[in-house]
Image (cartoon, rainbow, N blue to C red; front, side, top):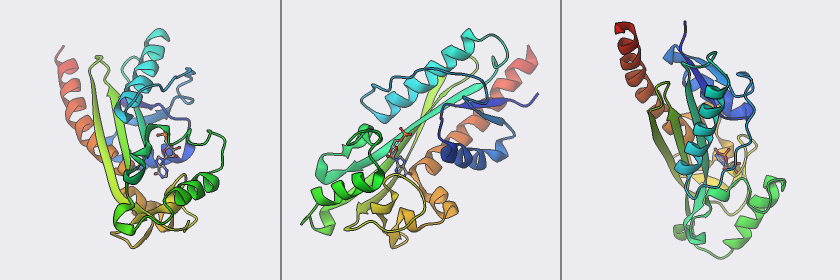
Length: 216
Ligand code: IMP
């Protein structure tokens, strides 16, 4: 049987990205919905890592309560956001809830640009941060991280991506994250990097896990 990964996200775009990056692990990747799990998760952590653990552990508990069907699955969850240095790392863990969860991103982006009015380029440094937490079938937990450094642009540019991508200038490419193709973004993004690190850890730990269970 193919080992399974259940990824705690309801976001279809993220799931596509995750399936693409983890496709060569030989593991089957399911969303919470595909695994039939519904859980109310209160993300009240103060760091990205804490929130990722809260999500992964809540889902792992729901799976355990649900019986044996997904008993051997690895549960993964991520948390991510934008840190702007000049704004003391705002919006940070509140990135999704900044100005209200239902406020459109063009409004949120414009607000951040306004708050940086007159701030010179060298002080507009920012980064996207991502933490991914894993709960292994034996209950062991660990996390991986990824970041991408950039600057907050003076205006919104580009139509790709989502969230704060149109105002995040990527020096390496000389354009905003929203002007990159999905493939370019995945290669350099905070989530792409944290996922690559998670993939390496999983390959290592899963082979040990299956060697152990084969021996039993
Ligand atoms: P979460 O990880 O789903 O909780 O997302 C946190 C929030 O951070 C998102 O709703 C976006 O506002 C922001 N964010 C995270 N990753 C990205 C990205 O790749 N581009 C733009 N915004 C992002």
